[in-house]
Amino acid sequence: MTTDSTQRTRVLTGITTTGTPHLGNYVGAIRPTVQASRNKATQGFYFLADYHALIKCDDPARIQRSTLEIAASWMAAGLDPDGVMFYRQSDIPEIPELTWLLTCVTGKGMLNRAHAYKASVDKNNAAGNDPDADVTAGLFMYPVLMGADILMFKAHKVPVGRDQIQHIEMARDMASSFNHLYGEHLVLPEAVIEESVALLPGLDGRKMSKSYDNTIPLFSSSAQLKKLISGIVTDSRAPGEAKDTEGSALFQIYQAFASAEETNNLAKAYADGIGWGDAKQILFERIDREVAPMRAKYEELINNPATVDALLLKGAAKARELATPFIKELRHAVGLRSLASAATTQTGTKTSRAASPAFKQYREKDGQFYFKLVDPQGRVLLQSLGFASPKDAGMAIAQLQQDDAKAMAALGQQVGLGDGVSAANVAEALATLRTELAEKAKGKE
Ligand code: TRP
Image 1 (cartoon, rainbow, N blue to C red):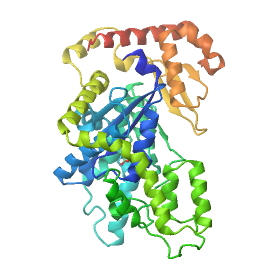
Image 2: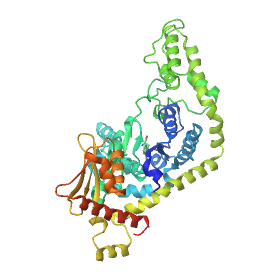
Image 3: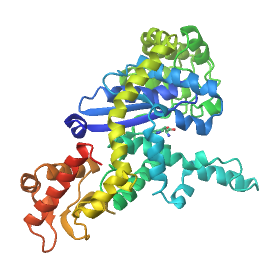
Image 4: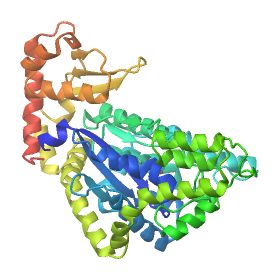
């Protein structure tokens, strides 16, 4: 892996390809990820979750169309495919492969508790049906596939909606279990919840969602946008009567697009009794101002699906430069490895994976992130104090792996020697680890 990708914070998120992107998707996912992708201190991984789409949708044409529309929307909104990893999940065969490795370290009981699965079971129970009626194994396994998306690229931060937090927790759990069994390979991710990103209401005032059929597509003609906006529910107050901003879907949608000053002005206009027709005109103009410059780019991409395909394949090739060697490392770790290499290790010295010193990363009840270095007999050689984030802990481990003497000095109190352990013991263990890493890097099985 390049220095670049080990040092920058890796941010990863996906969008499921089951529908036409609407203003809610734009405000909640597309726009914030495009903004985040411009942060040079991070490395972005943005992908089209089309394997996830199969869980919810059995209409092949719709999945294909949605993949094109979401890819085009993301790029039209400013995502630069050269500046980030931008790919389609199903172009990365390492993801389903990792899904299986994770499946084998994931407790079934944990998946029983996943919200989406539990909601289906509760519904079936309430209706007096078999608890698993109409529940596919795909829905049940959804969190594991998502875990593979995240862990494949060692993501540190995963921006998601509130409903997805549990999935990130589960991914952390899978990573811990895997690392515990096979050594420190997977990075524990953290969910990032954008507090400022409000849930956008739809035409009828409920959350804008395909399932309520109350959406406003992100890309439609100006005329269509205007027509849809005119259909947003309002109360029956006449022009001249003061209006409430609270509970007004129109106002909330405006707020998601407007500056604080513009929002204040509309609030004043509400108090002054602006007519609903005029308020809708203001909303239409504000959204159109943001969307209009993106329309040409969107149209161009939508009309050239082969170009979008080529961009996605190029992105997948770039992503696989990371995924292919990593899955090789993981296969080796679990024992899916060349038979000759097993023979060598058997007859050789005690440097096989299983008998190596290893870093273990974990989280304590205090919410902080810790690690320790243990020798093959399980003796603790190094013990850290708490770090604020898994990334900080990971960076300390990386420093130690690079130059333990320098790192020990730099880390000070943060890392201490285990009972009866000398600096020389640590140096020896780290030297063993380093040799192994170097061997692995040479592609030696
Ligand atoms: N499950 C996410 C959603 O429905 C989409 C998704 C799939 C995702 N894989 C992911 C999001 C990995 C973040 C990281 O919103």
